[in-house]
Amino acid sequence: MKCSWTIPLILLPAILMGCAAEPFTRSPLPTLKNPDPGAIRAQLAHSLPDRFTSDDTVIIQIPFHNDLAVLGVLRVDRPAGTFELVGLNQLGVKLFHVAGDSHGDMIRFAVPPLMKHKDLLMAIAEDIRRMFLNLVPASVAETDTDSTTIEYSEETPLGKMVYEVGDSPPILLEKRLTGFFGTKWRVRYYRYHSFSNTLYPRGIVMDNGHYHYRIIVKNRDWGVE
Image (cartoon, rainbow, N blue to C red; front, top):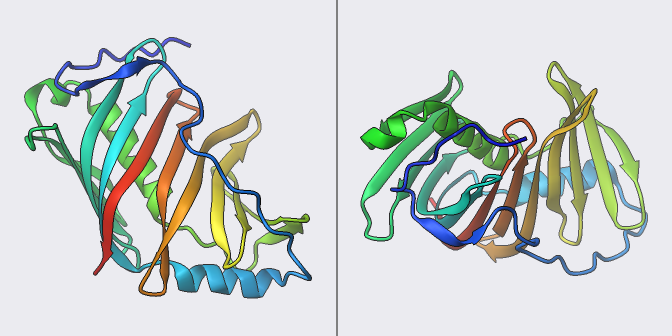
């Protein structure tokens, strides 16, 4: 389906058109030996930083449009369930500022051309929430184990939430929401970096099945608060 948005030129077009090849690769996962899903879930929860700030290159790929690239400054407080993302152009000029908390997502600022595309900004804000909050499956989630991963799944009012966990120490590989007609959205995590006993993905790919776009997050720097 062709996207109906007209993207403002202020969002720096990148070189490529449309959806390109996968931006990250994953090393072969080790074989799990007698995995304990409960213990692995607890290890995963312990490895996630509660509060952090990251500097990223954020690339948005929308069908039939140029790729769009912005510099992103992201701040997340997982215990509070809040996040803020500021998007800048390459000169450091602020283009937009979106945020979210327990009450929902919001647009704190956007340059005038972007305010005409609130639906796009709100969709991006919701995808940031999906990427960085609620990353640990519920303790009552059903589990399915294969040779290299454990899949945790739980029913929600919006569909089935699925988490795929693997590697050692355990990392979140994928999180997705599925419904009657298939996957509604999917986020994959790559190239984890260790810092202060926590793990952080240096590459993230979010596929939004409703709006048919992809967000690629290439982390440049991050720090635990």
